[in-house]
Image (cartoon, rainbow, N blue to C red; front, side, top):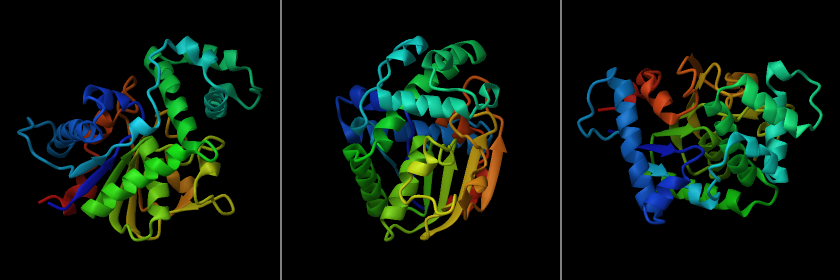
Length: 277
């Protein structure tokens, strides 16, 4: 089987803690789950017999810190960077319109009344990690990209599967390291195109309002739930050139962003077929 590297998304610090502050232990635990989730998607739900699909997970959550497990109402207590991300994100929801002007309480109230508790908790988790990664002059950003580059360089995978914030990390890492040649990049639930939150802060910066597929990536497939609140817009072709295929899926009205749902939904079956022995 050809090598496949995974780049995880938000909310994965607990793997590091549960592994006794071991990066390799966290990566191994996560890879075991990704194998199980992907097996379901590739086989239509057949029992997992220990089949291996993912060569390695590039684990970086320990560099972004542990998000506090607080109630959604605690968005009011976020630091300024996280608040900025949340407000910019919330502005993009059609139900808020264009008139939101920095009233964070209104954003928090909207999250609690218009969305289920899972979505509100997700937003609380999503913003601090994104803010930590994208902060100007962030050492964490450099460290995260170095980890992902090392894993890709060591494994020389033909496929990189990147979920959530991991798609931002993978995109920037591949641009920053032109020696890392990848046959197929699969992004899942990607916030790459999210205006005012992620898109304009990318490295390299978009040119004339457009990002571009990393030049040493041969194909790019983007998969997103049509209602995923992290994937705004779900279609990356509206922001990036070089996206070869867009797949919109309908995962779950509660678990609309989890890697378990994305890997298990069956949408990766056709793109991965040439790489699975």
